[in-house]
Image (cartoon, rainbow over all chains, first blue to last red; front, side, top):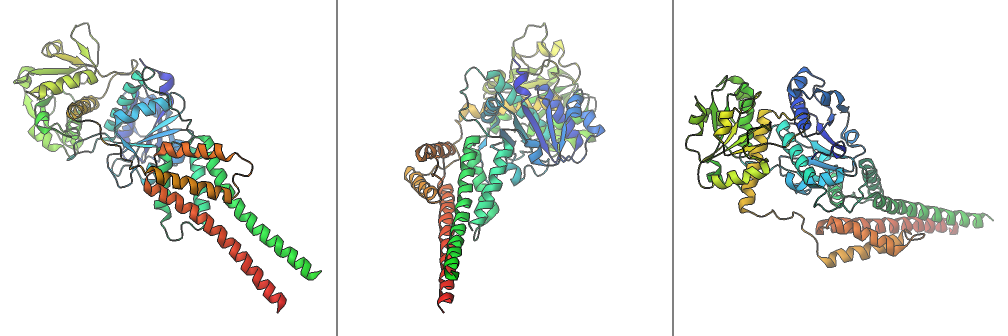
Length: 262
Length: 262
């Protein structure tokens, strides 16, 4: 029933958690569903006795937890990120229910490392965090009172993942994409933004909003490493071509000067 | 999406709960899933400030809660009882998963009052309580660490019930991507190939194969019209920037020639 070798590929990332009790309760929720890999991005208080108390037998998960200074550090090495959100925002990444998303996460986890990302208790995910995710996952809730406790959301997500894994392998189709790692995707976006700036694409527009839209597009596509190589090749060619143009022109000038002087 | 008239038929019964904080957290979990009818059988401490704190906006559920002296009082008027258990006992009730049990509970709730019964934190259900239930429900959990927090179990059960109710009437939500029309996508590829040729990207590579790979990538993303506009904007900026470079250089040259001649 359990496939621990798949579950070890799933990390739960809690970003900027305020209450240490929630971290402990989340660790307990994870462990009941067989998950043990916890990453904390800048928690307000950790380690903390309240976290230990609330973990209630899952202290080992807390002791092994990785405390990270940035979201990129926490996502390093992952190929798929599902981010939990309570809100439906204007930014429209693909938003799935846990029942839709967890089989996807399980499929990716069957082959490589993946992350389940949770924002802070009050404000949820930042735009930056959403931008680094492949799907947003929203637990369908009472429209008049939709705010699940953080650990409760962790429990529901891990429960759905665990159920999805039990059904996995039998009926689900294989993922046809070999997704690239988080850090490679980030490098692409750095490169892209740099070239877009260079060619003056941002002049009269809003760089952040545009970059978010491009992130959304490529998140949906779930880029493969080879595709990243192609896209970065195009970016390099753009730059190289420009450099070449400049060089050619200045060589011609040199030539002309040479002739003029000769 | 929500069917409050069915949900009002579902009561959550917590028997002999020890920690008032768990009662509050359970009330919150219930309310997020649209349930508001809470019955408490001989709670150790209730009402209690800790319950209020943990309910976090679901105080109305606590205020309306019925405190009962016996399990029979709490189950009065119900036609179907699903009892949550963490343990597999020798008692030979039918044991279902939440996914199996909640559609049943929803069916009964569509016609009459039903109960979701939870035992005490440490010992779970008594034999008497199990005897008064129609099905036992067990959340599949890590065999080495199967003890969910009471409120976490309430959250999972109410979540499954809520999902079961949604599937009862409605089909899946629409995909949120508004895909662009075929001809717009084709125009993008013509434009892309043209610019890639212009910047010399195809020099040492195989244009067709590369274009196919790019098609595959963007097909997966299911491009929207706005995204096509952005991508074509980038292509236009590339061309414009290159033209600008050439123009600048030839103007400089003109200038130099002018000087030379003057």
